[in-house]
Length: 186
Image 1 (cartoon, one colour):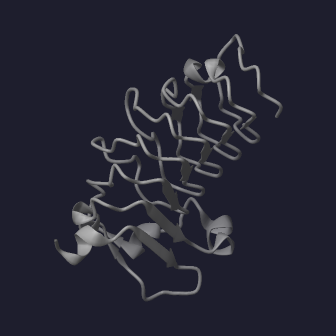
Image 2: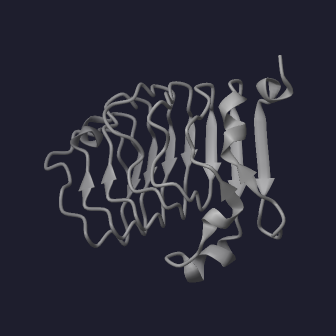
Image 3: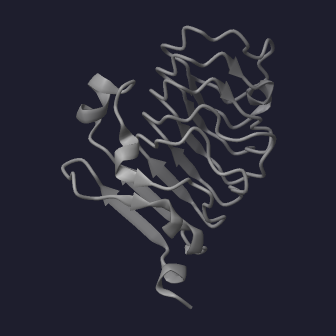
């Protein structure tokens, strides 16, 4: 087994560093990866999100993420979507704040473990995918997703959803007309 196949977690703090670069080809062999946490300084992102070139810290296309991932936290993720072959069946926490994500993925994904999704300030996000398999989802944070036009109707049936925030989503047009969420408080 190669060293990359043994890696279970990656934590990078890019808040004060200009010398750290990520080659996404490295992810291809990290089949046991359970935790990815890549942080950028929010002070660095807030004033210049539309023009920030976060891709300067990343090389390569994101073609693979381990199906073993429990936590995916990548503030300022420069990709427009997650890999199509990503199966988030073990994912619990998805935090892509300030990302360039337009769509997480197409279709339905098996994600019964997923509890938290934070896509706040992802200004290119235009649609929320089918979350019908995310039966344990408790928090969906979409604040400041200024390009968001559609929230998939599947969220209206999520019985464990307690928090769903959409502050600053001024282009929102399609939202479920009937809400059947018994746990929703916010």
